[in-house]
Amino acid sequence: MAVTVGELLSGAAGRLRDSGSETARLDAEVLLADTLRTERTRLIASPEAQVDGAAAERFTAAVDRRVAGEPVAYIRGIKEFFGLAFATDARALIPRPETECLVEAGREEVMDRLAAAARRRGIDPGAPSDGPIRIADIGTGSGAVAVALAVVLRRMKVIAGADVTILATDDSPDALELARENAAGHAAAEGMRFVDADLLPPVLPDSGAPLDIVLANLPYVRSDAIDGLPIAASFEPRQALDGGPDGLDVIRRLLALLPDVLAPDGVALLEIGADQGSAAPAAVAQELPGWTATDEMDLAGLPRILRVARGARPA
Ligand code: GLN
Image (cartoon, rainbow, N blue to C red; front, side, top):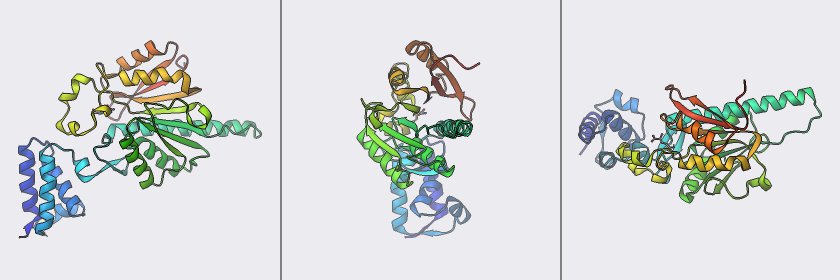
């Protein structure tokens, strides 16, 4: 029996509200649009449209999953990040909007370095080319950071392979598989390498050539805060969130590797929690004496990126 869009939406929104969703109506609209392969705005514009029984059943199944707390991104199998659609499922963390500023910071870093190299060549046209800028996205998960960066650089005419290479690592083979799918989906796999490693492989690609830019959104949630996260997070891999007692265990392990893997003028840009704006630089001071660590803010004005480099802070 056919029902209308409006009836389905109000029934589902009620169930979702009762289950504790703070975005009940929006969730219902997004899931129905996804079920019917249409735009949310078209549903809103035509509440009287008829939905056939089979589609209504598929919608109810999706709402059941959401009522049980599963994130909408896993139910749809897709999440928008940096204006791009990424495949998402339980193999990896769902890309978060705040992580877009890590991609933006990586893009700026690459463009500054390419501009500086071009200036050097302008002064001395015979100067040997520096080779590609070597980037690593450590703990790539769904591949969102590495792939979004590759796509945005391509739009700026940066040539994958020649101007930049991107190494994407993860210690979860399942996550790496998803990252590869996302790279292929955005035709961004060229110049990108995926390596199954705990942070970094014992020998870096290209005979151990050092990295110029390290990007990482590692797990940084305190173990005792995991249970307090919204129920949706319980569907995500715990190893992608749990950063140990103070949330900085995995970041500290990466910091300890930097002296060996980072080029002399290399930089690491690490996503941190909003409440780690002083603990994270303190961890750098402890692990890497003589290095510099500064916080950069996200769009909400919260500490979000820890910039780590050798030497004293520039005056
Ligand atoms: N920002 C994420 C959250 O609060 C945490 C991501 C991470 O640990 N890297 O759910």
